[in-house]
Image 1 (cartoon, rainbow, N blue to C red):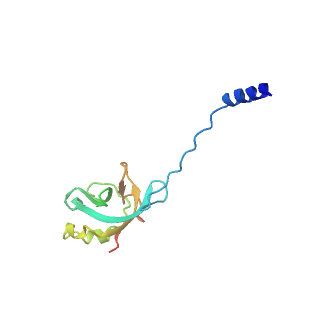
Image 2 (cartoon, rainbow, N blue to C red):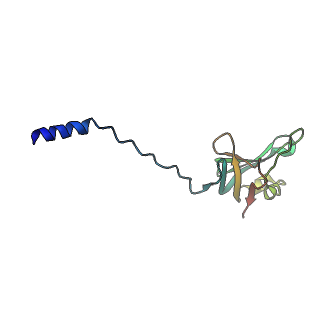
Image 3 (tube, helix red, strand yellow):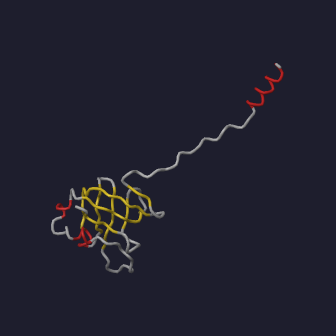
Amino acid sequence: MKRALILLLLAACGSKPVPETTTPVTTTPDQTSTESGEARFEGTITEIDFGCAVDAVCSVTIDGTKHVRFGHDTRGAAPADWGTSDSLMALMQDPTQGVGKKVSVYAATDAEPEHFTLKGKSEYFINVVD
């Protein structure tokens, strides 16, 4: 009996460790994953840059952390599909007018974390919802 118990303990000590299970990655409640490299989310505008009107990039910052490029200087650039940003462009007369407004976004992820772009698909959009 003692011998069987010792053999059992030795066998248990020599067994392979149980691999750790990984926790599945979940999406934050305000951001929904779509196809790989795309995102849908809603938030509040904290800053707008209409630099594309003067040779730069137009972008909007949402909730202080998400940056969405919605336009650029097109002179000398190859054609590209861009999503719709008409409701933001309507705010161009006074960029601070849009701060605090709620928006809905469908965009491609960009190279940096929390950076997105409307470039690449005509179905992408930024819509002011209030």
